[in-house]
Image 1 (cartoon, rainbow, N blue to C red):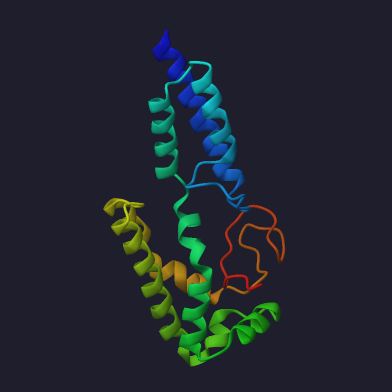
Image 2 (image 1 turned 90 degrees about the vertical axis):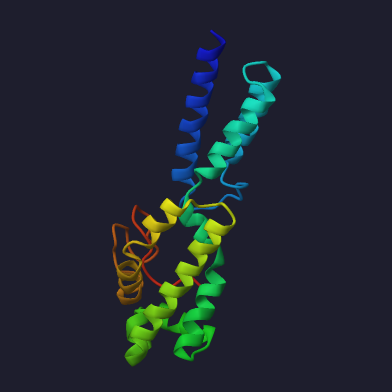
Length: 186
């Protein structure tokens, strides 16, 4: 009976975690280490009422943290990505922002430096992925999968026009889809 309750609690926690991950994909709510705040508030209640032990709660939290969306982890360093873009192209952050607002793709902005920009961004992303493996946030298999096709994805990002529809709804892409252009600069 206890094992069934634990299995149901874990299934519910994982379901809520999946829903929370999906819903937070477009809006970071300050979740800690990939565990949604909702899960973080539910688990202590399950421990308090005896449904779960503290060890089980900790195991669930650790599993959810390991399963956190990897993209969000790699997108935390957009400032560094902006620095790669601006240094490679020899422009300022203000120039980059102006081009973004004007609807110019990075490829248009780069001109004859497009290949150098793609190489620099692929190297930057590869370094981020390797660092995540080193810190234990990714497995070698996950890193290999993320590196597969990286050049094609970076090229698509560089060539995309800000505001173009990639499964989204207009310039700010409030609908489904991926942002495929340069990082937003505040």
